[in-house]
Amino acid sequence: MRGGPNLRRSIKPIPIGEGVICLGEDNNVDSCRPVIPDRDHEPMQHVGMSQESSRDTRPKQGAFMKNVIFLKILFCIVMVGALPSWADFLTGEDAYLREDFVRALEEWQPLAESGNAEAQNMLGYMYRYGQGVPQDFDQARQWYRLAADQGHARAQNNLGAMYRQGLGIPKNYEEALRWFRRAAEQGNGGAQNHLGLMYFEGEGVAKDVIQAYKWAYRSAQQGVEPAALAVDFLEQQLTPDQIQEAKRLAKEWTPKGEEVAL
Image (cartoon, rainbow, N blue to C red; front, side, top):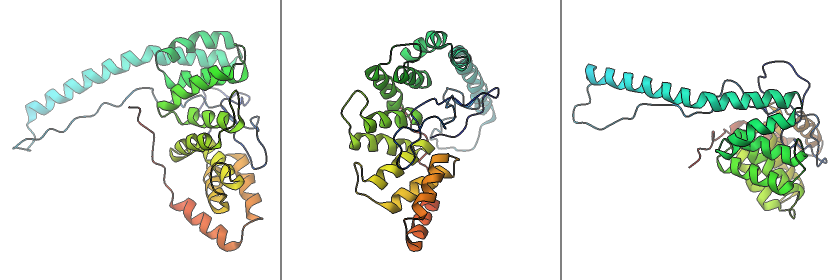
């Protein structure tokens, strides 16, 4: 999914990540917005207080203040440790947006090798389209998979697209469906649209136009333009009762939230 991120400056849309696919189109990427991560989401875990059992559950002021001070120190350590890698990612992003793909690769490669899922996803994309490196579907799939296994929704969507299109591997609709569903359940708009397409076509799953409408509708609510076109198309195919049921399912659905890497 994709929602439009808050970039630091206005730029011409660049199709980063596998394209959102409209019904009947297999590779429509040009209309997609960039998927560089939002600046509001820092690549670090939130630090929280643990609850310990005790006979006396009344707060003790001295112990409480010690916990607060400890957590503040720990939070600062986490912040300081994360800042250099995030700064490197942003440096790579600047280079990428200038289409200086060699410099972007120099910044993102070490981060990806150290386990940064955002950088892994972007390396997958660069190998997918041959940006700064020779096009290599195997490398793209490997980098996407590393990020996807960490719960990175865009990488899951991108990986699903490779299985669906058979890029460097035989087409595998069941595997594509699995990755699209994981990303869609997190709220990824692109994956939701892909999932709707697969239900419409009966790829890896029984054909189900109500589920197709449900997922296209959810995607369209995030501003994914091809999904909005898919909804218009489906409304010409479904009965009023089917549309009502599909909308009910779509409105009752709630995202499971971001996956937590184990």
